Picture 1 (tube, protein in one colour):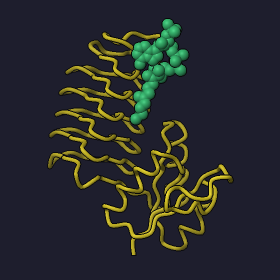
Picture 2: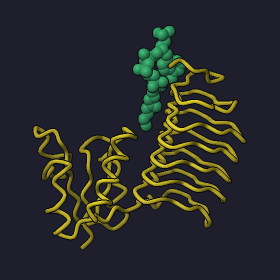
Picture 3: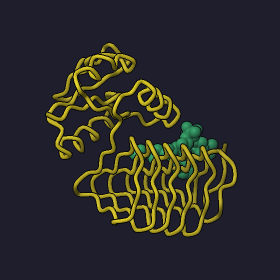
Length: 205
Ligand SMILES: CC(C)(COP(=O)(O)OP(=O)(O)OC[C@H]1O[C@@H](n2cnc3c(N)ncnc32)[C@H](O)[C@@H]1OP(=O)(O)O)[C@@H](O)C(=O)NCCC(=O)NCCS
């Protein structure tokens, strides 16, 4: 029996659970620090995010289902240090080219397309119907939101968040810790961390 414990009982966690079901997991539970949350849909919340020893002893795999990149990175690091088996989840209806490498703790959601020559880091979210084109490097704990797209030869740093429907044009590099707002279009390198919005994307914070 394949068993998975997901840290973070949220809507995002629910989509991860659905992807996990299609990856053959029979038993799925959640861990969350909000003690008022007892269930998420049909799934039980069995403890806090720090309470991993029980599921670990019971043979559960682990996945961090939290949108905030800094928290996701901290939790995944702690799971790995504790010897928990953090897995990678790829929805069967995602299209991933033969030579793409995908790191530990990354989820690729339904309808996503990842083209050849691309490297996806650890702890990334390649969300529903997004696309990452050829020869990209997507840094650890970055998030390509629902319907966002990167063109060819894009490099995203660590902990970047490309908002829903945003676009990064070809041959662009984005520094670590850049938040690119919903619907933004990035046409020049983003050289410093910050929040960028609009068409063309400009720094607001
Ligand atoms: C970019 C973003 C993070 C900014 O959030 P914030 O730091 O809370 O900023 P605010 O909402 O205070 O907005 C600051 C200003 O930027 C503008 N702004 C915010 N997001 C914008 C966007 N995506 N495009 C254009 N302008 C935007 C606001 O209208 C506001 O302008 P004003 O000062 O003239 O009123 C957020 O608006 C956003 O786009 N989030 C993406 C969410 C998403 O994609 N979720 C998908 C999950 S799959």
